[in-house]
Amino acid sequence: MTNFHIALFQVFFSAHYSGEDLVPKFRNGEYWKKVFGPVFIYLNSTMDGTDRQLLWDDAKLQTLTQVESWPYEFPVSEDFQKCDERGSVTGRLLVRDKKTKENSYQAMTWQIKFRVDSVHQTGAYTLRVALASATLSELQVRFNDVMVNLPHFTIRLIGRDNSIARHGIHGLYWLFNIDVQSAWLIQGDNTIYLTQTKSSSPFQGIMYDYIRMEGPPG
Image (cartoon, rainbow, N blue to C red; front, side):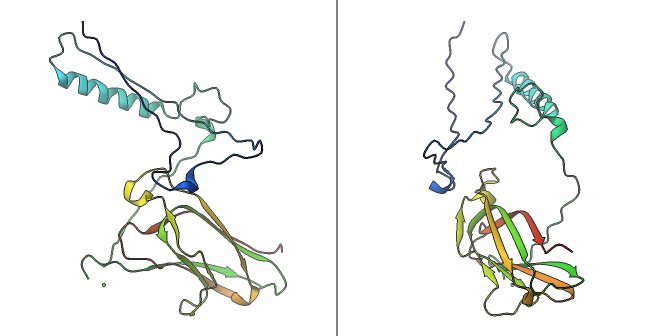
């Protein structure tokens, strides 16, 4: 019989990827909770310990079983969403990567086109931009004029979570609420220009969570 020990080290909070901004800070009895896990550990063995391929194939089969079982139904915490409480996204994503010369990068501008039937001169318009991640980036927002010298809004330089490079789920969430002046809008077709201006590295960029334009009722 072979004796062995397993050391499992779990780090649920760390400043390694994103800096101190990602470390929760609780003060004055502030209430906060978060669900971690479930954490699954699987151990297998062979009778004589010689056929490692059997162990590997068995581990891969167990992985497929767990993937097909997700999301689990057994957690009892009400904060763990069950299968009927979750959504899914399907489709095809096409990426076309253009470069001005090799090993160089340039700022990108995305356009959002929308129509306004009537502009309320005294009404309140708000653009909400939520980011799931940002790495040494600056997002500039312009309305209906991509060439205007000063952007209507800029978030300045933010982000060090490095999710783009690490393909992780540790991005730091950002939410910006932008007061939109009615003078920036026109009756008919409008365009919002979103420009990420920093482009000295392939890992500089932002990940959007959602973008929402709100206008006065009616």
